[in-house]
Image 1: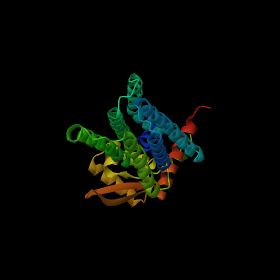
Image 2: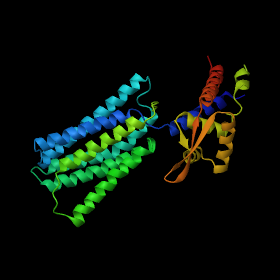
Image 3: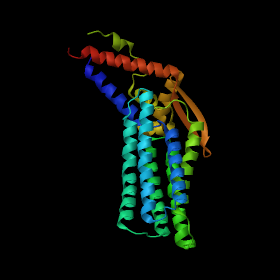
Image 4: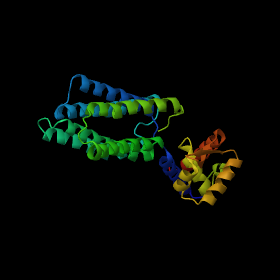
Amino acid sequence: MDPNWAVENLQTIRTLMERSAVYRRALAPIMLFAGIAGVTAAAVGIIFRLDSSRAFGTLWLVTAVMVILGAFLIARRQAIRDQEVFWSPPTRRVAQALLPPLTAGMFVGAATVYVLKGDAGGGFNLLLTLVWLLFYGCSLHAAGFFMPRGIRWFGWIYIGLACAILGFLAVVQPAVEINAHWLMGFFFGVLHLAYGAYLYLTEKRNPVA
Amino acid sequence: MNPEPFLKLDRLIHEKGRLAIMSLLAAAPELTFTELRDAAGMTDGNLTTHIRALQLEGYVSVAKSYQNNRPLTTCSLTAVGRKAFAEYINLLEKIVRQHKPP
């Protein structure tokens, strides 16, 4: 009897298990946290009238960084509490899928905000919002291959609505003025809160990552 | 060499196709028939046969429902199946340990 056979079998089992493992750790709390941060940032932007391109971009880039760090800490805390490995293969795959579109979106935001030193106007903020929505939708869709199926649909909602608004503004009503903070608050605040609440109410209480 | 662990290996799980199905299901709460088929690289007929065998032994449960008006078959490990799979892994690890040079 060849002992290598047992080692090979174990390796195959590990590979198959890693392939089918789906990231589902702390999704509801992360979504709720992102939603609260989104709504708060929108409120701050509207109340303090942070409407210049630089103020708008800075506010939302800082919010994005805070949400990413917060999500990281929430997931890590749950992993420690459940005595599981934090940087598990599903976590790694989700991070790898999220990274390129999120980095690109943040880079586009940072670059355009700081290249345009002055105020490029509300139209610029709106365009930046829609570009961010598209990047975010793509990142969710990419990560959705390693997460519960709903995440891919959630990504499509961002992509679809961003395209619809873009089309509406470009073709139907170019002169319409929408405060970009409201739009950001709705998409990054309200939608996250709604999805977080949905997950919280429907998620099975057996998180595995 | 002690052949005891070899003899104890669950013969139902100890088959390439069924082992793949059990491994895939062990890491996910449930998988659809299509997901299982694609991940295990099996044909529909092959997968159905293996799932039926595992179902008869009480290792796998199959649920049929509808999604967007289309039939959806989802499979998951039962508690018995999970226990049998864990025992199978333990035995494999035991075999590996037995043959490890001191």
